Length: 143
Image (tube, rainbow, N blue to C red; front, side, top):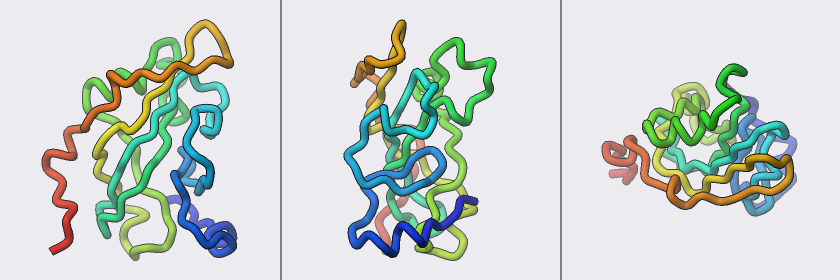
């Protein structure tokens, strides 16, 4: 479960545009240089939905939560290809009682970026901007 960040959310009238890997609300357009893991060579913006209330979020994903041994490759890209991103709990804006600790549906990759041979230049790879397996079974429309 992640913290609610009431101090930020109550001061800014508009909703966050996306949430970083630590579920901190972000209010700028997504760009890979804004992710929490400054050492990452990958950044993705994933559309997810809370298991509890079905609220949709845009969530950053990087190598922050992958094992250090996997850093030699591109574990986010590999996980996207396999359809097994393990993103854990959704953000916690106080929208539902159970949601912040229930996990999330991984719906689709909105943006995928990587950098190789440099620490500065990011390249977008639209071939990995795909629907994820959860989207096929997700019942997001509220009855």
